[in-house]
Length: 83
Figure 1 (cartoon, rainbow, N blue to C red):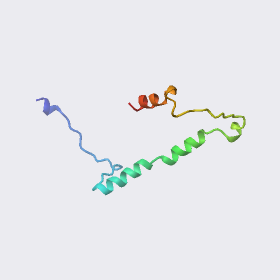
Figure 2 (tube, rainbow, N blue to C red):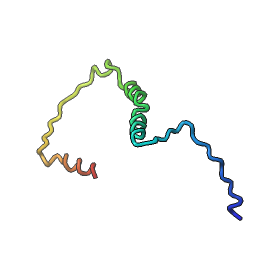
Figure 3 (cartoon, rainbow, N blue to C red):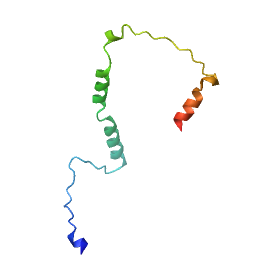
């Protein structure tokens, strides 16, 4: 009785969806999807950068870092982040 009351909607395929017929098409679609929106993302990042004139007063100082010194805990940090 319950099944008789269930209304199953008619299937309507999505015209915007493209299904790959073989592995090569699937790989091509994957590449296209990865590249989709890249230009917009690059433009957004570029727009978010400050004007070069705003960086005129920026002072950058080199930090001394000894990669072989275990007391700076850089290996512990890398290990913790990778787990």
